[in-house]
Every structure is written in structure tokens, then in C-alpha cells.
Length: 414
Ligand SMILES: [Zn+2]
Image (cartoon, rainbow, N blue to C red):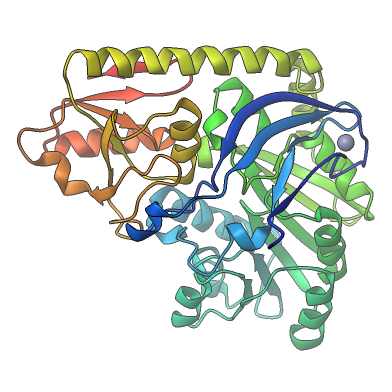
């Protein structure tokens, strides 16, 4: 039998066993494992989706790690370019980095989890040398655009190979992968090794404070092993001779934290670091009670959403889903929203079209189905973090139905 994962009994950063399991979203299949029509007949593998709080370093992490080969497989369907929000965020990030750190053609920028190369694109206008690291099949899209990409998982050994072949890196970025990779210490060792003496590592990860405050429990899925606040990250880097010297909150993925770190003493420490730590302390991110309360709020949020959906169905009305993001599947599986409730998932991009959602087996169809008369009167917005972009666009295209927003407090908007 293949090894499909492991139970995590210790904190991934500080190795403590004082873990407080505060939330269980049940057993779920990997959230990005959309199925071909034929695959639906086969049994899917379900893994526990439980979340723990470390009472020593305050890291929040999953209680079970799925084998990465089950998650980031060849046919992995996530493609950065399809998200306008991310493209804009990356353009902004690379422009800032070029200016702030005076990057030139002498410098190397490495992107870990480089996906289709969209982020690295931004460095090209300053002739910065670039290199992507992308283990999944999406690497092909980057290579087609002539973006140098190694189709591998990043680790210390690969860092050594990169130094030999390309030299050390002035900039290393990891956006929405730094919380995803198992064996985080090996990754940070590799980053420390690969950086130049004044090099900068920038990570962007979904921010725990936003996840708690805005009830973004659907952002919890097997790919996201850890849910970072700043304090445990500072500890992580310190364990490897590095330090955090700047930090900012950004809006991507419903609220993320952009963290700048470097070799100890290489850059002056911004006041932003102290400010964010104070904010976290005040919010209660280092206290167990916050997480107990969160569990209760998540339960209440699910009940509220199911009441809305059931009332609509009992009234004899159709509901469809908008978007087919990975997080939508956490929501659908946790709330058990199946094909009896949602007719289909309408998706603009064609990457997942014709596939069926993992667990609930709801078909992903072309967005244009929405506008066929009679239109469905209700649409559940699964990509709710983009609701301010999606809703006006759909209305403009002629959709007349109402929208159900699932979090934080489920509600209907016209
Ligand atoms: Zn810990």
C-alpha cells in the first residue's frame, strides 16, 4: 500500500507536544483533486482535516499531513495567470523589490513554487536573472514562456545545486507555498544557504488573523499545513540564523502576511514587526480561548448557511455555485452541500471545466450556463474573497439572481 500521509503529534516549528486540537472539519478528500467523469465511480481517499494550536510557539497547524505527491501531482490544476488579483499583486511585489533592493542584471531571483512563472515575469523588465522551482506539471507553462524553471521540490540539496549552476540568490520568493511544504526546517536551511549575505527572502501566506477574524475556515485544506501568525515565524527563522526585518498585511486570498527575512543583522528591523506582534497579542492569537471561541463560531456559521440553503430549496428554487476554488471544496464537504443543493459550479476558466468536485461530485461548467433562461435564482459564491469583483461582473453580463455569501455571517445579497 502506498504511504498516503501521517499524523502530526509535534509542532512543526518548535517540536512541542503541547498541541491543542481546536477545530475538526471532518474527513475530506484533497480539495484540489477534481475528478474526471469516470473517476467518480472510484472510491476517493479521505483524510482527517483537524487544526491544532501549539501552546508553546503559538503556531497553528494541521493534525495530519497528506503525502505531497497526493496533493501536488502532475495534473495539479492551479494556474496563477487565471487570477487577476494575483497577477496584480505579483506585479506590485516585484516592482517594489526591484526598487527597494536595487536589483540589477547581476542579481538572481528565485521563486519557490513558481507555478506558471507569473511572479518571475515581473523581474524581467530590470533584467534580473530569474529561476523558478515548480514540482508540478504547471512548470510546462513557464517553460513555454522561456522562464527557466526546475521541475523539482525545493530543499537544501537543491539549494546547493542552484548555487553551483546559477550562484547565490539576492531575492527568494515563496508565495502561498511556504505554509504548504512539509519539513519546513529543511526548506529554511535551504533558503539560508541559497541567499547572498544581504539577500532577502519574502514569503506570502494566508494570515491567521484574517482566517480567525473573517471566519475564513474554508481556507483550511490539506495543502495548507500551517496557518501563520508572525510570532512563530520569527522563532522559525531565528532557529536558522535568520530574522524577520519587515512585514506587511496584504489583501490576497482573503488576507495574507508578506514577511521579509534575511541573515541575522543584514537589514535594519522595521517598526512594522513590533506593530504586528502587538496587534496579534491584542487580538488574542497567542491564547487558547480565541481558538475555542473560533470553533463555536465556525459551527454557528455552518448552521446559518445551511438554513439559508435549505429554506431556498424548500421553497422549490434552484441554486448554483460560483467558482470552483480549492477552498470551495472545504466548504462544500464540511457543510455537506451536495448535488441535491447545488446544480453545478459555474467557472470562467476552462482548467477545471467538465470535472467534478472532490467529495460532493458537483460538475464544473462554463460560466455562460448562468445566463441561460430560466436563470437560477440563487448563486452561492464560493470564491467569496473576490465577491466585489465577481458580483458586479456577473450582473453586468446579465445575471439576475441573488448571491449567497457563505462567510463570515452567511447572508444573501441582491
Ligand atoms: Zn510550537
